[in-house]
Image 1 (cartoon, rainbow, N blue to C red):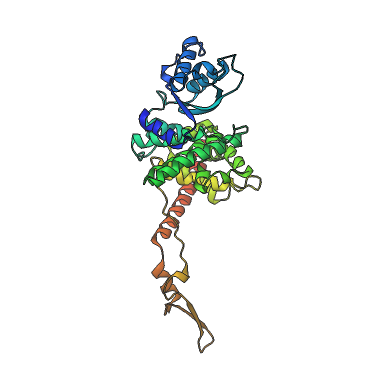
Image 2 (cartoon, helix red, strand yellow):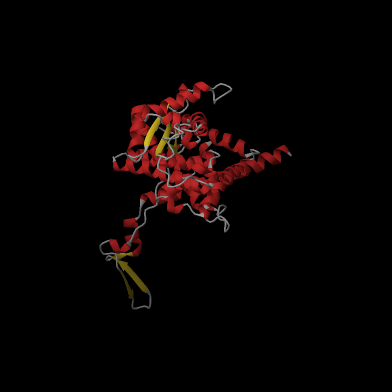
Length: 378
């Protein structure tokens, strides 16, 4: 990924009074002692390059935290407050400055393909074409990280951290939409939704919140759903296809995506994800099935259901008349009711109904085949 576009995104969302310092993790020694003198000096030099004495003023524990961030997970952004007078024991007055240390992309996160795999937890060869240019993804990721420079307060709980991720992603999504890149924004949301199942990473399971509009949706019920959706979805696939474990269920999805998403959709249709103790789970799973069909190879989206408001249709008011023989006759727009509804029937709705029927039929046939196979084995 490009450093110029990435850092441009960082500066787009970071406050102007924040000193932004970038560190290239590939310049650090990954040997046994990550807190080596050379690594410490690299970080101090980066700080000092931005503000005189800043590198020497930073306490060793802060420098070590920066090294941790650079080597453990990139890209990333860590906000700090450092006393710029800390190096001089004769100066008693503190002069605190806001510093955000931004860890640039590492070797495993420096292309849009690698970044999308990090977001979704899905190997890039299992995904459909990724919209947008490398530069666009650089900018969006930079905006996300720059938002972390301005945390209202340090996250304490898992819910705090997830809320912080929603803020950062919403900034990136809003920028993409405002600049005419809706396709990239929607793909980013889909990748986050996929990640809620294909990654063990609750603090980044914010895709549903992005669809709902932001941090206000991060409730206790949301957290319960986010913490359980992975085991619930993979559990359905494990049990239906007899693969033995959640890990094997993930492998099965990679081999048979169409079969697996239809299994999840069947369970969703049958109400298997309804849970009074986990009321948000069903909507999270529904969002997952839609994101899966939009982004995964081997499947296609189901046609959307289009609702019809009869009051919006000219001549749609119904007239009911009693005939002379005591029967009732209904006309809508001066034609019979069946003729009227046939004229406004949505072919997409019919197509979705057919698709769902086919899924149900295929699952029924699969079950029958399993029964027959089991009988033969016995």
